[in-house]
Image (cartoon, rainbow, N blue to C red):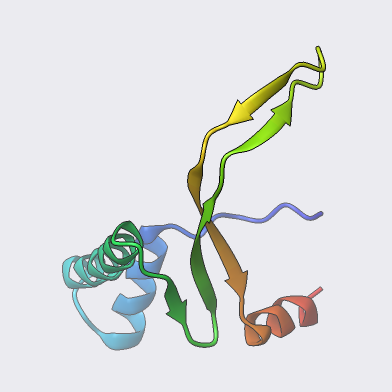
Amino acid sequence: MRSVGTLTRADLAESINRRVGLSRAESLDMVEAILNRVCDALADGENVKISGFGTFLLRDKAERIGRNPKTGIEVPITPRRVLTFRASQMLKDRICATE
């Protein structure tokens, strides 16, 4: 696996600034507004689908019995909600084409 840099909020804002022509502050506000909307939707139990990118899915996992691998003792695992991301086929094709 190759090591790559990390895309940050500031990078996204800079890209909007260059492509759209908004000020740096307006660009950063736009990035924050989008991320806040996604977070709010997920917090409200909604799935988030971004066409051509992927889907953030919420799943409720039921209580189950797990096992401590060191001792072998069975322990209950509490129910929980998990967030998963499923990449769109378009994103998968684009990522695989660059390798």
